[in-house]
Image (cartoon, rainbow, N blue to C red; front, side, top):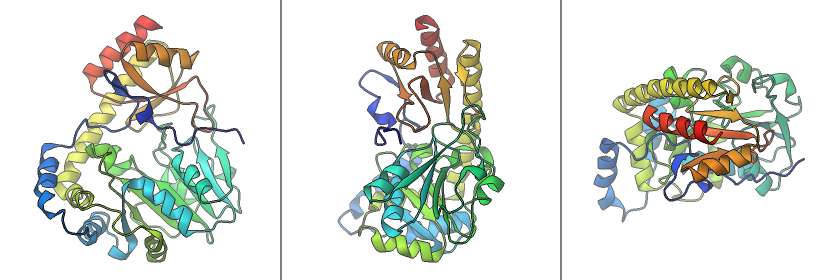
Length: 338
């Protein structure tokens, strides 16, 4: 298989003085009410952390049993736990998608098969492409970096006895109504969630796993003790409250509008926007993408290179959705340097 830098992420693109369109964290900082909750927990840091309250909050938020929830240090920890807890005979990662699942599997000594979705088909999931003997399958929904939202029915068609289907829903709370989510629970399906994208918490590392109790127990058995900090637990409880869920829905609706504005502006400039973007980021293809990315950097904008994602090349760029003022300035820069 072709070699890709699976550990390259958008944070490598950013730098002093650059407008960040490379990292898919929606807020520049956590909202005030969340910062207040975190600050109020500082006096408790002398005690070892517990995830009991956070687990209960996640279970209540999704209508699951506490035994079906594992709170993690961000969704990325879950990839490592899955790679450590299971010994798949045939692991498959559906690409293009977030590269850490494959990186974690390879680091744990597993061989990995790639299923590459077609740009010509809009990166739409074709379940028939997944080998029948695959017993561990990873897919993102909505997928990073394509921003495609796969139908729940297509995902569920991949679930079968003897197979663990892992659906990375790190950006699902950025979809109005959380459409196509499998978080409510299905046999053989593991769902991963992140709190870092919507709430500006990438530096805190907060996420969780939703799965059957036996899968959660296997993951917990290989989780490092106290891997989830006290502050991450506090943030998890706070972000699962009804008021926070209402705010997240409003943010998702705003992101949808801002994305449509960005897509319209890019299309007007003749930039090819790929697929049917539904997440808070878009994937584009431009001639001589590496050169354009460098020129955008000189103009003060960091964008995410696409050639580190299996299935993509140097002419692919991922752009995070931002507010309209930022988008207008970015589109002006694109127009001037193109």
